[in-house]
Length: 152
Image (cartoon, rainbow, N blue to C red; front, side, top):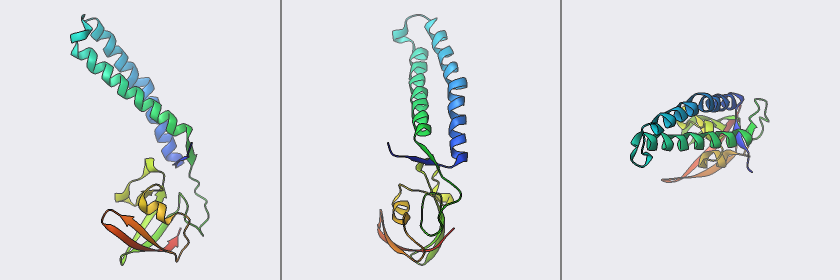
């Protein structure tokens, strides 16, 4: 079972989402199913079918979030600043443009805001590198050369 990297905030967000699903959304769906059953013939009851489908979806979300929480490994703020690890913020130069990225777990990745997953091509290429290292990153349009300028 591979770890799922999360910040403390990300873990709390998942726990909150799980609680909402279990305490609010799932009971609401169960109530809808009960009301739909009262309408009679279930084989042609669209309300019942919709509610059952939604129940399956919500149950799937609950299982997925529970698994993420079970596999969670918290990203520590204090990390080795000599080597790129999950949780590091790095300054890199790729194709003559400087960028700043924070390496996160896949659940918290948001590339448009500089948060890249440790499982992404960029994230995988940077992990284990040191300041001054140059890496070649495979991207959809070919390859890109990057140099790690700083690890924060």
